Image 1 (spheres, one colour):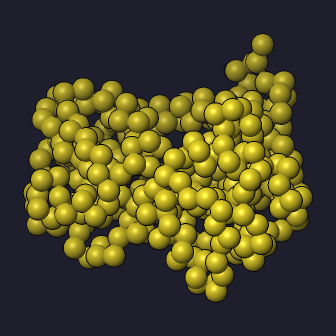
Image 2: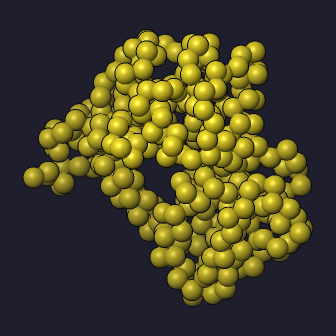
Length: 303
């Protein structure tokens, strides 16, 4: 039985940083400690739990199946503590009202659910009127005043000057591939290497536009073998080794529906992160409920 009394919050933070960054050295930079401190924290967690949380690879580390399970618990512990510490910053539990929020597909599926649950614990009397819209419709609705807030991939927004905005997360883009794929054994992989292999292109949330942008900056083009708006279809094709893709960590899940593993690894080329953020009308006065939701998201994501 794991001795939970021997696990510290600091060790959980170091573990989450290592899981997010994929390298102990980058995790150390993120949490402002030495690499040896991160390594020691992870080794201690593995010793206490009696399982390996990471596979050690030539280019960094990748979570094991047990590591993925533990990551969800570690995030929950840290988020619960953050909510408790942040509570005095919020407007108060007695606040009532509703807030109209537009969000796109990936935001609804991969970003909002846990945050909505946390918000409702702090503000049970506030109703969230949530609409599933694409970015352009969200922007139009915010301009017209039919939405209080929009959650969009702001790195795709061309007219950001029309809005007040706050970037909530910058999610690194990495290579997704099967462990049996030829690129999995390479010590370093750049876009030029990826261009020689079949590429699976996600079209959801302007994925084609985002992908074209950083490929064209390098003067390269992916060999697109399959386009899809289904993330589960994409995961299945990649997991079976029919191609690779480059997507943000926010969308990453380690397993396909058939239970096949999907690996991720950093690219040698600099790839811009996916920036997800809030937008609102610069001249409109937000209701107390909308202000509370905006402040909650900013606090939860940026602290």
